[in-house]
Length: 387
Length: 229
Image 1 (cartoon, helix red, strand yellow):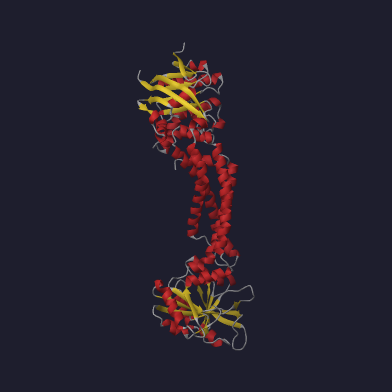
Image 2 (tube, chains in turn yellow, cyan):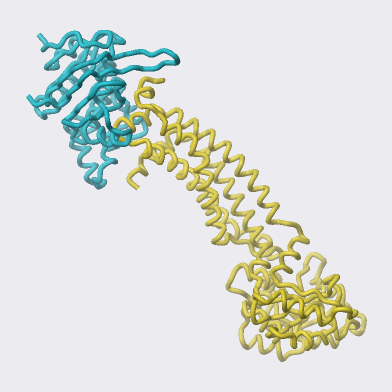
Protein backbone atom coordinates (compact mmCIF):
# COMPACT_ATOMS: atom_id res chain seq x y z
CA UNK A 1 0.00 0.00 0.00
CA UNK A 2 2.85 2.42 0.75
CA UNK A 3 3.76 2.41 -2.94
CA UNK A 4 0.23 3.35 -4.04
CA UNK A 5 0.84 7.15 -4.14
CA UNK A 6 3.96 6.50 -6.25
CA UNK A 7 2.03 4.18 -8.60
CA UNK A 8 -0.91 6.57 -8.80
CA UNK A 9 1.33 9.54 -9.57
CA UNK A 10 3.16 7.55 -12.25
CA UNK A 11 -0.10 6.38 -13.80
CA UNK A 12 -1.60 9.86 -14.00
CA UNK A 13 1.62 11.55 -15.09
CA UNK A 14 -0.11 12.32 -18.39
CA UNK A 15 -3.75 12.60 -17.39
CA UNK A 16 -5.32 12.80 -20.84
CA UNK A 17 -3.45 9.77 -22.15
CA UNK A 18 -4.25 7.72 -19.05
CA UNK A 19 -7.94 8.70 -19.09
CA UNK A 20 -8.23 7.74 -22.77
CA UNK A 21 -6.53 4.41 -22.08
CA UNK A 22 -8.81 3.83 -19.09
CA UNK A 23 -11.83 4.61 -21.27
CA UNK A 24 -10.82 1.99 -23.82
CA UNK A 25 -10.37 -0.61 -21.06
CA UNK A 26 -13.67 0.49 -19.50
CA UNK A 27 -15.55 -0.01 -22.79
CA UNK A 28 -13.91 -3.41 -23.34
CA UNK A 29 -14.97 -4.66 -19.91
CA UNK A 30 -18.42 -3.08 -20.17
CA UNK A 31 -18.86 -5.18 -23.33
CA UNK A 32 -17.39 -8.15 -21.51
CA UNK A 33 -19.89 -7.83 -18.64
CA UNK A 34 -22.88 -7.40 -20.95
CA UNK A 35 -21.95 -10.16 -23.41
CA UNK A 36 -21.04 -12.61 -20.66
CA UNK A 37 -24.47 -11.94 -19.13
CA UNK A 38 -26.06 -12.88 -22.47
CA UNK A 39 -23.94 -16.04 -22.68
CA UNK A 40 -24.80 -16.97 -19.07
CA UNK A 41 -28.50 -16.38 -19.76
CA UNK A 42 -28.42 -18.69 -22.78
CA UNK A 43 -26.45 -21.32 -20.92
CA UNK A 44 -28.50 -20.98 -17.72
CA UNK A 45 -30.63 -23.97 -18.75
CA UNK A 46 -27.55 -26.13 -18.84
CA UNK A 47 -26.01 -24.54 -15.75
CA UNK A 48 -29.12 -25.04 -13.66
CA UNK A 49 -29.62 -28.59 -14.91
CA UNK A 50 -29.74 -31.23 -12.23
CA UNK A 51 -27.28 -34.08 -12.76
CA UNK A 52 -29.87 -36.47 -11.33
CA UNK A 53 -32.47 -35.59 -13.97
CA UNK A 54 -32.78 -37.31 -17.36
CA UNK A 55 -34.98 -36.34 -20.28
CA UNK A 56 -36.70 -38.97 -22.41
CA UNK A 57 -37.96 -37.80 -25.80
CA UNK A 58 -38.94 -39.53 -29.04
CA UNK A 59 -35.79 -40.96 -30.61
CA UNK A 60 -35.86 -39.02 -33.88
CA UNK A 61 -37.62 -35.75 -33.02
CA UNK A 62 -38.54 -33.90 -29.89
CA UNK A 63 -41.87 -32.89 -31.47
CA UNK A 64 -43.02 -36.52 -31.80
CA UNK A 65 -45.27 -37.38 -28.82
CA UNK A 66 -44.79 -40.47 -26.69
CA UNK A 67 -47.52 -42.71 -25.21
CA UNK A 68 -48.47 -41.82 -21.62
CA UNK A 69 -48.33 -45.56 -20.90
CA UNK A 70 -44.52 -45.29 -20.92
CA UNK A 71 -44.78 -43.61 -17.51
CA UNK A 72 -45.20 -46.88 -15.58
CA UNK A 73 -42.56 -48.68 -17.63
CA UNK A 74 -39.98 -45.96 -16.99
CA UNK A 75 -40.84 -45.93 -13.29
CA UNK A 76 -40.00 -49.64 -13.11
CA UNK A 77 -36.45 -49.21 -14.45
CA UNK A 78 -33.96 -49.87 -11.62
CA UNK A 79 -32.36 -46.67 -10.34
CA UNK A 80 -35.34 -44.47 -11.26
CA UNK A 81 -36.74 -42.52 -8.31
CA UNK A 82 -39.54 -40.58 -9.94
CA UNK A 83 -41.00 -39.59 -13.30
CA UNK A 84 -42.84 -36.48 -14.51
CA UNK A 85 -43.99 -35.57 -17.97
CA UNK A 86 -44.85 -32.50 -19.99
CA UNK A 87 -46.44 -31.70 -23.31
CA UNK A 88 -45.91 -28.70 -25.53
CA UNK A 89 -49.03 -26.52 -25.80
CA UNK A 90 -47.81 -24.06 -28.48
CA UNK A 91 -49.18 -20.91 -26.85
CA UNK A 92 -50.09 -17.54 -28.25
CA UNK A 93 -51.32 -14.78 -25.94
CA UNK A 94 -53.24 -11.89 -27.52
CA UNK A 95 -50.90 -11.64 -30.52
CA UNK A 96 -48.05 -13.44 -32.31
CA UNK A 97 -45.26 -11.60 -30.51
CA UNK A 98 -46.47 -12.66 -27.05
CA UNK A 99 -45.15 -16.18 -27.27
CA UNK A 100 -44.03 -18.06 -24.18
CA UNK A 101 -43.75 -21.72 -23.30
CA UNK A 102 -46.86 -23.44 -21.94
CA UNK A 103 -46.47 -27.02 -20.74
CA UNK A 104 -49.28 -29.42 -19.89
CA UNK A 105 -48.08 -31.28 -16.80
CA UNK A 106 -49.16 -33.50 -13.95
CA UNK A 107 -48.85 -30.76 -11.28
CA UNK A 108 -47.64 -32.88 -8.39
CA UNK A 109 -45.16 -34.93 -10.37
CA UNK A 110 -43.78 -31.86 -12.17
CA UNK A 111 -43.36 -29.64 -9.10
CA UNK A 112 -41.78 -32.53 -7.19
CA UNK A 113 -39.34 -32.96 -10.08
CA UNK A 114 -38.29 -29.27 -9.97
CA UNK A 115 -37.93 -28.38 -6.28
CA UNK A 116 -35.92 -25.29 -7.30
CA UNK A 117 -39.22 -23.73 -8.50
CA UNK A 118 -40.72 -21.82 -5.60
CA UNK A 119 -44.52 -21.69 -5.17
CA UNK A 120 -46.69 -20.91 -2.15
CA UNK A 121 -48.05 -24.15 -0.55
CA UNK A 122 -51.70 -23.13 -0.94
CA UNK A 123 -51.13 -22.26 -4.61
CA UNK A 124 -49.41 -25.60 -5.15
CA UNK A 125 -52.42 -27.36 -3.63
CA UNK A 126 -54.82 -25.37 -5.81
CA UNK A 127 -52.80 -26.30 -8.90
CA UNK A 128 -52.92 -30.00 -8.00
CA UNK A 129 -56.62 -30.02 -7.12
CA UNK A 130 -58.08 -27.76 -9.82
CA UNK A 131 -58.41 -29.45 -13.21
CA UNK A 132 -58.52 -26.13 -15.11
CA UNK A 133 -55.65 -24.63 -13.09
CA UNK A 134 -52.54 -22.95 -14.40
CA UNK A 135 -49.49 -21.43 -12.69
CA UNK A 136 -47.20 -18.89 -14.30
CA UNK A 137 -43.71 -17.52 -13.75
CA UNK A 138 -43.66 -14.36 -11.65
CA UNK A 139 -41.86 -12.41 -14.40
CA UNK A 140 -44.56 -13.38 -16.93
CA UNK A 141 -47.30 -12.35 -14.50
CA UNK A 142 -45.62 -8.96 -14.04
CA UNK A 143 -44.99 -8.58 -17.77
CA UNK A 144 -48.65 -9.09 -18.71
CA UNK A 145 -50.20 -7.62 -15.58
CA UNK A 146 -52.00 -10.85 -14.66
CA UNK A 147 -53.49 -11.44 -11.22
CA UNK A 148 -53.62 -14.76 -9.39
CA UNK A 149 -57.30 -15.81 -9.38
CA UNK A 150 -58.15 -14.49 -12.83
CA UNK A 151 -59.18 -16.48 -15.90
CA UNK A 152 -56.30 -16.82 -18.33
CA UNK A 153 -57.22 -16.92 -22.03
CA UNK A 154 -54.47 -18.54 -24.10
CA UNK A 155 -54.59 -19.63 -27.73
CA UNK A 156 -52.84 -22.76 -28.96
CA UNK A 157 -51.27 -23.12 -32.38
CA UNK A 158 -51.13 -26.92 -32.07
CA UNK A 159 -54.00 -28.25 -30.02
CA UNK A 160 -57.67 -27.54 -30.89
CA UNK A 161 -60.32 -28.27 -28.29
CA UNK A 162 -62.94 -30.93 -28.97
CA UNK A 163 -65.20 -28.26 -30.52
CA UNK A 164 -62.41 -27.20 -32.91
CA UNK A 165 -61.68 -23.93 -31.12
CA UNK A 166 -58.06 -22.98 -30.60
CA UNK A 167 -58.94 -20.69 -27.68
CA UNK A 168 -58.42 -22.09 -24.22
CA UNK A 169 -59.07 -20.69 -20.79
CA UNK A 170 -57.42 -21.63 -17.53
CA UNK A 171 -57.65 -20.45 -13.93
CA UNK A 172 -54.44 -18.77 -12.83
CA UNK A 173 -53.94 -20.12 -9.30
CA UNK A 174 -50.29 -19.41 -8.53
CA UNK A 175 -46.95 -17.83 -9.32
CA UNK A 176 -43.61 -19.58 -9.83
CA UNK A 177 -40.31 -18.05 -8.81
CA UNK A 178 -36.73 -19.10 -7.99
CA UNK A 179 -34.00 -17.83 -5.67
CA UNK A 180 -31.19 -18.52 -8.11
CA UNK A 181 -31.17 -15.93 -10.93
CA UNK A 182 -29.96 -18.64 -13.33
CA UNK A 183 -33.06 -20.75 -12.52
CA UNK A 184 -35.40 -17.75 -12.65
CA UNK A 185 -35.13 -17.72 -16.45
CA UNK A 186 -36.60 -21.23 -16.47
CA UNK A 187 -39.70 -20.00 -14.65
CA UNK A 188 -40.75 -17.86 -17.62
CA UNK A 189 -43.36 -20.47 -18.36
CA UNK A 190 -47.06 -21.29 -17.84
CA UNK A 191 -47.86 -24.76 -16.52
CA UNK A 192 -51.39 -26.12 -17.09
CA UNK A 193 -52.99 -29.16 -15.50
CA UNK A 194 -52.78 -32.01 -18.00
CA UNK A 195 -55.98 -33.61 -16.62
CA UNK A 196 -58.21 -30.92 -18.12
CA UNK A 197 -56.03 -30.40 -21.19
CA UNK A 198 -55.93 -34.07 -22.18
CA UNK A 199 -59.68 -34.48 -21.72
CA UNK A 200 -60.56 -31.33 -23.64
CA UNK A 201 -58.22 -31.58 -26.61
CA UNK A 202 -59.46 -32.89 -29.92
CA UNK A 203 -56.53 -35.17 -30.74
CA UNK A 204 -53.39 -36.60 -29.23
CA UNK A 205 -55.14 -37.89 -26.13
CA UNK A 206 -53.08 -40.30 -24.07
CA UNK A 207 -49.80 -38.96 -25.37
CA UNK A 208 -47.23 -36.56 -23.96
CA UNK A 209 -44.21 -34.65 -25.29
CA UNK A 210 -41.39 -35.88 -23.05
CA UNK A 211 -40.62 -37.50 -19.74
CA UNK A 212 -38.40 -36.12 -16.98
CA UNK A 213 -36.77 -38.85 -14.92
CA UNK A 214 -35.18 -38.48 -11.49
CA UNK A 215 -32.48 -41.04 -10.76
CA UNK A 216 -30.78 -42.09 -7.52
CA UNK A 217 -27.19 -41.87 -8.68
CA UNK A 218 -25.94 -39.39 -11.28
CA UNK A 219 -22.91 -41.62 -11.91
CA UNK A 220 -25.31 -44.19 -13.39
CA UNK A 221 -27.02 -41.72 -15.72
CA UNK A 222 -25.68 -43.40 -18.89
CA UNK A 223 -26.62 -46.90 -17.80
CA UNK A 224 -30.12 -45.87 -16.69
CA UNK A 225 -30.64 -43.89 -19.92
CA UNK A 226 -29.70 -46.97 -21.92
CA UNK A 227 -32.00 -49.16 -19.80
CA UNK A 228 -34.97 -46.83 -20.39
CA UNK A 229 -34.37 -46.70 -24.14
CA UNK A 230 -33.95 -50.49 -24.25
CA UNK A 231 -37.54 -50.87 -22.99
CA UNK A 232 -38.87 -49.31 -26.17
CA UNK A 233 -36.43 -50.58 -28.78
CA UNK A 234 -38.18 -51.77 -31.95
CA UNK A 235 -41.49 -50.26 -30.78
CA UNK A 236 -43.32 -47.67 -32.93
CA UNK A 237 -42.20 -45.03 -30.41
CA UNK A 238 -38.52 -45.51 -29.72
CA UNK A 239 -37.00 -43.14 -27.19
CA UNK A 240 -33.83 -41.19 -26.63
CA UNK A 241 -32.87 -40.57 -23.01
CA UNK A 242 -30.07 -38.23 -21.98
CA UNK A 243 -28.97 -36.19 -18.98
CA UNK A 244 -30.87 -32.89 -18.67
CA UNK A 245 -27.66 -30.87 -19.08
CA UNK A 246 -26.83 -32.50 -22.43
CA UNK A 247 -30.37 -31.90 -23.59
CA UNK A 248 -30.22 -28.22 -22.53
CA UNK A 249 -26.88 -27.67 -24.28
CA UNK A 250 -28.14 -29.32 -27.46
CA UNK A 251 -31.32 -27.25 -27.32
CA UNK A 252 -29.38 -23.99 -26.81
CA UNK A 253 -27.10 -24.84 -29.72
CA UNK A 254 -30.12 -25.06 -32.01
CA UNK A 255 -30.42 -21.28 -31.45
CA UNK A 256 -26.70 -20.79 -32.01
CA UNK A 257 -23.49 -21.28 -30.08
CA UNK A 258 -23.83 -18.03 -28.14
CA UNK A 259 -20.86 -18.86 -25.90
CA UNK A 260 -18.52 -19.31 -28.87
CA UNK A 261 -19.83 -16.15 -30.54
CA UNK A 262 -19.31 -14.11 -27.36
CA UNK A 263 -15.82 -15.58 -26.91
CA UNK A 264 -14.80 -14.58 -30.43
CA UNK A 265 -16.09 -11.02 -30.09
CA UNK A 266 -14.35 -10.61 -26.73
CA UNK A 267 -11.10 -12.11 -28.02
CA UNK A 268 -11.04 -9.45 -30.76
CA UNK A 269 -11.84 -6.68 -28.24
CA UNK A 270 -9.15 -7.77 -25.80
CA UNK A 271 -6.55 -8.25 -28.51
CA UNK A 272 -7.13 -4.62 -29.54
CA UNK A 273 -6.83 -3.54 -25.90
CA UNK A 274 -3.60 -5.51 -25.61
CA UNK A 275 -2.04 -3.69 -28.55
CA UNK A 276 -3.32 -0.20 -27.61
CA UNK A 277 -2.58 -0.37 -23.90
CA UNK A 278 0.71 -2.19 -24.42
CA UNK A 279 1.89 0.59 -26.71
CA UNK A 280 0.77 3.31 -24.29
CA UNK A 281 2.42 1.59 -21.35
CA UNK A 282 5.69 1.10 -23.22
CA UNK A 283 5.67 4.78 -24.25
CA UNK A 284 4.96 5.90 -20.69
CA UNK A 285 7.86 3.87 -19.27
CA UNK A 286 10.20 5.04 -22.05
CA UNK A 287 9.49 8.65 -21.04
CA UNK A 288 10.29 7.85 -17.42
CA UNK A 289 13.68 6.17 -17.86
CA UNK A 290 15.52 8.93 -15.89
CA UNK A 291 12.95 8.67 -13.07
CA UNK A 292 13.38 4.92 -12.89
CA UNK A 293 17.14 5.42 -12.83
CA UNK A 294 16.72 7.75 -9.84
CA UNK A 295 14.64 5.16 -8.03
CA UNK A 296 17.43 2.66 -8.59
CA UNK A 297 20.02 5.22 -7.50
CA UNK A 298 18.37 5.78 -4.13
CA UNK A 299 18.23 2.05 -3.49
CA UNK A 300 15.25 0.48 -5.29
CA UNK A 301 16.49 -2.91 -6.48
CA UNK A 302 16.03 -4.23 -10.04
CA UNK A 303 13.31 -6.56 -8.77
CA UNK A 304 11.45 -3.80 -6.94
CA UNK A 305 11.46 -1.54 -10.00
CA UNK A 306 10.20 -4.46 -12.13
CA UNK A 307 7.35 -5.08 -9.70
CA UNK A 308 6.49 -1.36 -9.61
CA UNK A 309 6.10 -1.23 -13.40
CA UNK A 310 4.01 -4.42 -13.40
CA UNK A 311 1.91 -3.09 -10.51
CA UNK A 312 1.23 0.09 -12.46
CA UNK A 313 -0.09 -1.99 -15.38
CA UNK A 314 -2.23 -4.05 -12.97
CA UNK A 315 -3.61 -0.86 -11.35
CA UNK A 316 -4.50 0.55 -14.78
CA UNK A 317 -6.31 -2.62 -15.85
CA UNK A 318 -8.07 -3.07 -12.49
CA UNK A 319 -9.38 0.50 -12.56
CA UNK A 320 -10.66 0.26 -16.14
CA UNK A 321 -12.08 -3.24 -15.79
CA UNK A 322 -13.65 -2.52 -12.38
CA UNK A 323 -15.54 0.50 -13.70
CA UNK A 324 -16.60 -1.40 -16.81
CA UNK A 325 -17.94 -4.33 -14.80
CA UNK A 326 -19.68 -2.06 -12.27
CA UNK A 327 -21.46 -0.15 -15.02
CA UNK A 328 -22.43 -3.42 -16.77
CA UNK A 329 -23.84 -4.73 -13.47
CA UNK A 330 -25.75 -1.48 -12.97
CA UNK A 331 -27.10 -1.42 -16.54
CA UNK A 332 -28.49 -4.97 -16.65
CA UNK A 333 -31.54 -4.44 -14.40
CA UNK A 334 -32.54 -1.52 -16.64
CA UNK A 335 -32.02 -3.70 -19.72
CA UNK A 336 -34.12 -6.45 -18.16
CA UNK A 337 -36.93 -3.96 -17.58
CA UNK A 338 -36.62 -2.62 -21.12
CA UNK A 339 -37.00 -6.10 -22.63
CA UNK A 340 -40.16 -6.60 -20.59
CA UNK A 341 -39.27 -10.18 -19.76
CA UNK A 342 -39.11 -11.30 -23.42
CA UNK A 343 -35.53 -12.34 -22.82
CA UNK A 344 -34.09 -14.54 -20.06
CA UNK A 345 -33.02 -12.41 -17.07
CA UNK A 346 -29.58 -10.92 -17.64
CA UNK A 347 -27.25 -10.56 -14.67
CA UNK A 348 -23.53 -10.53 -13.92
CA UNK A 349 -22.82 -13.89 -12.35
CA UNK A 350 -20.11 -13.96 -9.61
CA UNK A 351 -18.06 -16.24 -11.87
CA UNK A 352 -18.10 -13.45 -14.49
CA UNK A 353 -16.49 -11.09 -11.95
CA UNK A 354 -13.79 -13.67 -11.26
CA UNK A 355 -13.31 -14.23 -14.98
CA UNK A 356 -13.00 -10.46 -15.51
CA UNK A 357 -10.42 -10.23 -12.72
CA UNK A 358 -8.42 -13.05 -14.31
CA UNK A 359 -8.57 -11.44 -17.76
CA UNK A 360 -7.59 -8.01 -16.36
CA UNK A 361 -4.60 -9.34 -14.41
CA UNK A 362 -3.44 -11.51 -17.33
CA UNK A 363 -3.70 -8.57 -19.74
CA UNK A 364 -1.83 -6.36 -17.25
CA UNK A 365 1.01 -8.84 -16.92
CA UNK A 366 1.31 -9.31 -20.68
CA UNK A 367 1.19 -5.53 -21.24
CA UNK A 368 3.47 -4.68 -18.32
CA UNK A 369 6.12 -7.33 -18.80
CA UNK A 370 8.12 -5.82 -21.72
CA UNK A 371 8.50 -2.35 -20.10
CA UNK A 372 9.09 -3.99 -16.71
CA UNK A 373 11.95 -6.05 -18.13
CA UNK A 374 13.34 -2.94 -19.78
CA UNK A 375 13.22 -1.14 -16.44
CA UNK A 376 14.92 -4.12 -14.80
CA UNK A 377 17.80 -4.11 -17.30
CA UNK A 378 18.27 -0.36 -16.99
CA UNK A 379 21.84 0.65 -16.07
CA UNK A 380 21.78 3.64 -13.72
CA UNK A 381 24.94 5.25 -15.07
CA UNK A 382 23.79 5.01 -18.72
CA UNK A 383 20.27 6.23 -17.92
CA UNK A 384 21.52 9.22 -15.90
CA UNK A 385 23.94 10.09 -18.70
CA UNK A 386 21.00 10.04 -21.13
CA UNK A 387 22.22 7.01 -23.15
CA UNK B 1 41.06 10.91 11.13
CA UNK B 2 39.42 7.54 10.48
CA UNK B 3 39.25 6.58 6.80
CA UNK B 4 35.73 6.28 5.45
CA UNK B 5 36.51 5.58 1.78
CA UNK B 6 39.58 3.55 0.86
CA UNK B 7 40.31 3.09 -2.84
CA UNK B 8 43.16 0.94 -4.11
CA UNK B 9 44.28 0.33 -7.71
CA UNK B 10 40.91 1.41 -9.07
CA UNK B 11 40.54 0.90 -12.80
CA UNK B 12 37.45 1.37 -14.92
CA UNK B 13 37.23 0.37 -18.53
CA UNK B 14 34.21 0.93 -20.77
CA UNK B 15 33.57 -1.13 -23.84
CA UNK B 16 31.98 0.79 -26.68
CA UNK B 17 31.47 -1.57 -29.61
CA UNK B 18 34.89 -3.11 -30.28
CA UNK B 19 36.73 -0.30 -28.54
CA UNK B 20 37.89 -0.47 -24.92
CA UNK B 21 38.28 2.85 -23.15
CA UNK B 22 40.13 2.89 -19.85
CA UNK B 23 38.70 5.87 -17.97
CA UNK B 24 40.44 5.40 -14.61
CA UNK B 25 43.96 4.03 -14.30
CA UNK B 26 44.75 2.42 -10.95
CA UNK B 27 43.64 5.18 -8.59
CA UNK B 28 44.59 5.07 -4.91
CA UNK B 29 42.66 7.38 -2.61
CA UNK B 30 41.65 7.70 1.05
CA UNK B 31 38.79 9.94 2.16
CA UNK B 32 38.56 10.43 5.93
CA UNK B 33 35.20 10.41 7.70
CA UNK B 34 33.82 13.93 7.92
CA UNK B 35 35.84 15.23 4.97
CA UNK B 36 34.48 17.49 2.21
CA UNK B 37 36.25 16.62 -1.02
CA UNK B 38 35.93 18.43 -4.35
CA UNK B 39 36.81 16.31 -7.37
CA UNK B 40 37.95 18.58 -10.20
CA UNK B 41 39.31 18.15 -13.63
CA UNK B 42 38.59 18.72 -17.30
CA UNK B 43 35.74 16.97 -19.13
CA UNK B 44 36.55 13.32 -19.71
CA UNK B 45 39.05 13.19 -16.88
CA UNK B 46 37.02 10.48 -15.12
CA UNK B 47 35.73 12.45 -12.13
CA UNK B 48 32.04 11.44 -12.57
CA UNK B 49 33.13 7.83 -13.15
CA UNK B 50 35.08 7.92 -9.90
CA UNK B 51 32.10 9.47 -8.09
CA UNK B 52 29.75 6.79 -9.46
CA UNK B 53 32.11 4.08 -8.25
CA UNK B 54 32.37 5.62 -4.77
CA UNK B 55 28.55 5.88 -4.64
CA UNK B 56 28.05 2.27 -5.72
CA UNK B 57 26.25 3.20 -8.93
CA UNK B 58 28.81 1.33 -11.01
CA UNK B 59 31.35 -1.42 -10.43
CA UNK B 60 35.09 -1.18 -11.13
CA UNK B 61 36.95 -3.25 -13.72
CA UNK B 62 39.82 -3.78 -11.27
CA UNK B 63 40.90 -2.62 -7.82
CA UNK B 64 38.94 -2.26 -4.62
CA UNK B 65 36.64 0.25 -2.93
CA UNK B 66 36.09 -0.05 0.77
CA UNK B 67 33.50 2.22 2.38
CA UNK B 68 33.20 2.22 6.16
CA UNK B 69 35.13 -1.05 6.17
CA UNK B 70 32.97 -2.82 3.57
CA UNK B 71 34.20 -3.91 0.12
CA UNK B 72 31.43 -2.51 -2.09
CA UNK B 73 33.12 -3.65 -5.31
CA UNK B 74 32.32 -7.24 -4.30
CA UNK B 75 28.60 -6.70 -3.64
CA UNK B 76 25.91 -8.13 -5.91
CA UNK B 77 23.44 -5.80 -7.64
CA UNK B 78 20.79 -6.37 -4.95
CA UNK B 79 23.27 -5.93 -2.10
CA UNK B 80 24.59 -2.77 -3.71
CA UNK B 81 21.02 -1.38 -3.93
CA UNK B 82 20.47 -2.02 -0.22
CA UNK B 83 23.88 -0.56 0.61
CA UNK B 84 23.15 2.63 -1.35
CA UNK B 85 19.76 3.00 0.33
CA UNK B 86 21.36 2.79 3.78
CA UNK B 87 24.65 4.62 3.34
CA UNK B 88 24.67 7.10 0.45
CA UNK B 89 22.74 10.23 -0.43
CA UNK B 90 22.91 11.48 -4.02
CA UNK B 91 22.66 15.03 -5.36
CA UNK B 92 22.77 15.67 -9.12
CA UNK B 93 23.20 18.70 -11.33
CA UNK B 94 19.70 18.35 -12.82
CA UNK B 95 18.08 17.64 -9.39
CA UNK B 96 16.33 14.51 -10.73
CA UNK B 97 13.18 14.91 -8.69
CA UNK B 98 10.04 13.03 -9.71
CA UNK B 99 7.91 15.75 -11.30
CA UNK B 100 4.57 14.15 -10.37
CA UNK B 101 5.31 14.05 -6.65
CA UNK B 102 5.27 16.92 -4.15
CA UNK B 103 8.50 17.98 -2.45
CA UNK B 104 7.39 16.04 0.64
CA UNK B 105 6.72 12.84 -1.36
CA UNK B 106 10.03 13.19 -3.21
CA UNK B 107 11.88 13.41 0.07
CA UNK B 108 9.96 10.41 1.43
CA UNK B 109 10.99 8.18 -1.51
CA UNK B 110 14.13 6.62 0.08
CA UNK B 111 12.10 5.92 3.24
CA UNK B 112 9.73 3.65 1.28
CA UNK B 113 12.56 1.13 1.46
CA UNK B 114 12.53 1.19 5.26
CA UNK B 115 10.09 -0.23 7.81
CA UNK B 116 8.98 3.23 8.94
CA UNK B 117 5.25 3.89 9.19
CA UNK B 118 3.59 6.50 6.97
CA UNK B 119 3.50 8.96 9.89
CA UNK B 120 7.17 8.38 10.67
CA UNK B 121 8.07 8.84 7.00
CA UNK B 122 6.18 12.12 6.92
CA UNK B 123 7.90 13.33 10.08
CA UNK B 124 11.39 12.43 8.83
CA UNK B 125 10.70 14.16 5.49
CA UNK B 126 9.47 17.28 7.31
CA UNK B 127 12.66 17.39 9.39
CA UNK B 128 14.82 17.05 6.24
CA UNK B 129 12.87 19.80 4.49
CA UNK B 130 13.22 22.03 7.56
CA UNK B 131 16.96 21.38 7.56
CA UNK B 132 17.22 22.72 4.00
CA UNK B 133 14.85 25.63 4.77
CA UNK B 134 11.91 24.44 2.67
CA UNK B 135 9.33 23.34 5.22
CA UNK B 136 6.83 25.81 3.73
CA UNK B 137 7.22 24.30 0.24
CA UNK B 138 6.44 20.70 1.22
CA UNK B 139 3.28 20.43 -0.86
CA UNK B 140 4.73 22.06 -3.97
CA UNK B 141 5.66 19.97 -6.96
CA UNK B 142 9.09 20.44 -8.57
CA UNK B 143 7.57 22.47 -11.42
CA UNK B 144 6.36 25.01 -8.85
CA UNK B 145 9.82 25.53 -7.32
CA UNK B 146 12.87 27.52 -8.39
CA UNK B 147 16.09 25.73 -9.41
CA UNK B 148 17.68 26.44 -6.04
CA UNK B 149 14.62 25.16 -4.20
CA UNK B 150 14.55 22.01 -6.32
CA UNK B 151 18.18 21.36 -5.46
CA UNK B 152 17.40 21.87 -1.76
CA UNK B 153 14.62 19.27 -2.07
CA UNK B 154 17.13 16.94 -3.73
CA UNK B 155 19.53 17.53 -0.82
CA UNK B 156 16.71 16.84 1.65
CA UNK B 157 15.98 13.57 -0.21
CA UNK B 158 19.69 12.69 0.01
CA UNK B 159 19.73 13.40 3.75
CA UNK B 160 16.45 11.88 4.86
CA UNK B 161 17.79 8.38 5.49
CA UNK B 162 20.77 9.84 7.41
CA UNK B 163 23.47 8.48 5.08
CA UNK B 164 27.17 8.27 5.94
CA UNK B 165 28.23 9.73 2.63
CA UNK B 166 26.84 12.50 0.42
CA UNK B 167 27.77 12.14 -3.25
CA UNK B 168 27.18 15.28 -5.31
CA UNK B 169 27.68 15.52 -9.06
CA UNK B 170 27.94 19.17 -10.18
CA UNK B 171 25.27 20.21 -7.62
CA UNK B 172 25.48 23.88 -8.64
CA UNK B 173 26.01 23.40 -12.37
CA UNK B 174 22.53 24.67 -13.28
CA UNK B 175 22.35 27.49 -10.74
CA UNK B 176 23.27 31.17 -10.73
CA UNK B 177 26.14 32.32 -8.53
CA UNK B 178 24.02 33.50 -5.62
CA UNK B 179 21.90 30.35 -5.46
CA UNK B 180 24.99 28.19 -5.98
CA UNK B 181 26.60 29.84 -2.95
CA UNK B 182 23.49 29.09 -0.87
CA UNK B 183 23.58 25.41 -1.87
CA UNK B 184 27.32 25.17 -1.23
CA UNK B 185 26.89 26.84 2.15
CA UNK B 186 24.23 24.29 2.95
CA UNK B 187 26.57 21.44 1.97
CA UNK B 188 29.33 22.95 4.09
CA UNK B 189 26.94 23.22 7.05
CA UNK B 190 25.95 19.59 6.63
CA UNK B 191 29.63 18.68 6.58
CA UNK B 192 30.76 20.82 9.49
CA UNK B 193 27.76 20.77 11.79
CA UNK B 194 26.22 17.38 11.00
CA UNK B 195 29.42 15.47 10.26
CA UNK B 196 28.41 14.33 6.79
CA UNK B 197 31.22 13.23 4.53
CA UNK B 198 30.76 14.98 1.18
CA UNK B 199 32.33 14.05 -2.15
CA UNK B 200 31.50 16.61 -4.81
CA UNK B 201 32.38 16.73 -8.51
CA UNK B 202 32.64 20.27 -9.84
CA UNK B 203 34.10 22.28 -12.69
CA UNK B 204 33.74 25.46 -10.72
CA UNK B 205 36.85 26.60 -8.78
CA UNK B 206 34.66 28.84 -6.58
CA UNK B 207 32.50 25.85 -5.64
CA UNK B 208 35.61 23.82 -4.90
CA UNK B 209 36.68 26.47 -2.38
CA UNK B 210 33.87 25.35 -0.07
CA UNK B 211 35.54 21.93 0.23
CA UNK B 212 38.23 21.06 2.76
CA UNK B 213 40.22 19.30 0.09
CA UNK B 214 40.52 19.46 -3.71
CA UNK B 215 41.49 16.48 -5.84
CA UNK B 216 42.42 17.01 -9.48
CA UNK B 217 42.00 14.30 -12.02
CA UNK B 218 43.46 14.31 -15.50
CA UNK B 219 43.05 11.51 -18.04
CA UNK B 220 41.99 9.06 -15.37
CA UNK B 221 44.81 9.76 -12.95
CA UNK B 222 44.92 11.76 -9.72
CA UNK B 223 47.38 14.58 -10.37
CA UNK B 224 46.90 16.86 -7.39
CA UNK B 225 45.58 16.57 -3.85
CA UNK B 226 45.55 19.72 -1.74
CA UNK B 227 43.57 21.91 0.59
CA UNK B 228 42.04 25.07 -0.91
CA UNK B 229 44.07 28.21 -0.55
